[in-house]
Length: 343
Ligand SMILES: Cc1ncc(COP(=O)(O)O)c(C=O)c1O
Image: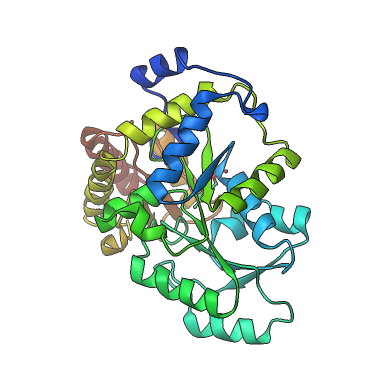
């Protein structure tokens, strides 16, 4: 099976499993796990923040950030296409009474700036935080650059709001921009990123920010049941991923471009090849039933993701996918498309 459903499906390599086997562990909730502490220090260093907190998932990292930033001002500005708004169970609203105020995302993951200004003038409550997403999942893995991030940060300062970056795939963004993560996040107050996506670790994310912010976040993590005991078992894999799997992200981006280029040549497949900047590829099959298309790919040994009932397909490259897999995927997609176009 070639699995392009998400970069979350990648499996730990033998080397990573050996690291896990030998991990030094302790009870992290009482501060005894050296491997977790080490990982948190590495994450703080690589993002240029004072401190970091290991959390079970990207969703929990974002939730904690919103709960801390919006302790008093109960409004969070989020993109209309953001993961926080669509895929995280509205946790900030459910558990923190925080109103998620959406501002339209442009197709590149930025905000429609005029709408951002207007919404803030019109909103009754003042926002505690503005949330950015980089890379932007629902906007095709698009990347937002330092200049744009700084522009939003300056604006946030002017209205006394914090900026949180959902950087689940921040290393993909830095790779695509050929820049340092520190530069990308230096003017945001907090950033979360995931070890279990392109970096290829099995579990976990991290939230980074000031010492004071992380102290508060640690206490919120406990409340949410996110304190993990001998978490060094999984943190060791995350540390390994930070050391070994960042440089290779460019291979995933190359494979995504290879896929997009090949798709653009298949009759019946619709794709804007130029939009593909990182490891996420969206395309559509306008004349074919999307559910049938995905079922048929599945039967031929290729998994992709698709919101049921739609003709929108998403394919994501990751560390278990080679350029040969992409070539085979294109052959499968081409033969399935031609077959279904005839029906
Ligand atoms: C942009 C973005 N943010 C946050 C998350 C949530 O991460 P997790 O699945 O670890 O909760 C995801 C997951 O796909 C994501 O794509």
